[in-house]
Length: 120
Length: 120
DNA sequence: CTGTATCCAAACCGATACTG
DNA sequence: CAGTATCGGTTTGGATACAG
Image 1 (cartoon, rainbow over the protein chains, first blue to last red):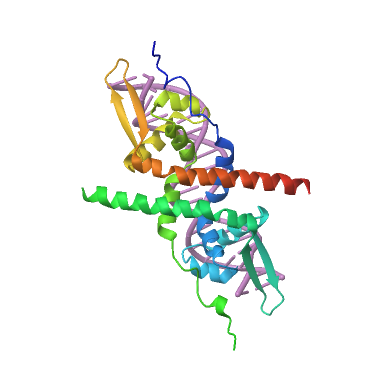
Image 2 (image 1 turned 90 degrees about the horizontal axis):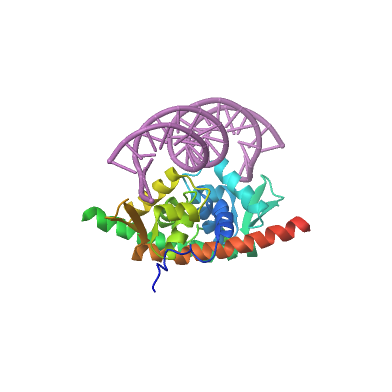
């Protein structure tokens, strides 16, 4: 007798935790962009501000601090005058890139579909 | 004469748009979880509430509407009594899964590292 | 140049109550 | 069962001004 199998149980693995964990990091408004620009090589505070024109200094500062705290990026102050600071991804930070690339890819698809359905 | 090549330009591709586009969708507090549970097959409203115990009806409703509007999920009302509604991922919705899996994977790594550095 | 501090507006989300 | 309406607290992020 064929019971209603599909209804019987929820999705197999309960991945809330790592998912939420990572979204807490990536969820910040500008975080993925910051990581993206850091991915191309070490970058200074002011450079990042120019890379992401609409970000405020406060947000950039907050995001960078969080990335450093999490071990995703490093901050190096150069003993120049005026002082300059350089941020770079750590090895752990580079492990985030596949996820970000995957997000970019589906973002493009979402945009495509949105454009097409608006026209229809 | 070796100029400072690295400083000359920003990261090659400017992916703000698709990235932000997708994060606007995935950024919602519960969205990734909802998509995850939908990935296992069609699911009803009440089932999802049980899958994600701490979500409020309001949020679940809002998220599902957004997913439907974006073409990521479908909503089918069954002509039963009492009425039941069934949500399912579309083909586009399934394209989000690789990104979510990538996020889950790095989430695990982040947790690992966090644990280890706390001990050190 | 590299940030931090403060204030303020908007978004987000939960709890509760109510409808079809 | 499957939602919607409303209220209120918390969080988020932008603008501006200021500091090392």
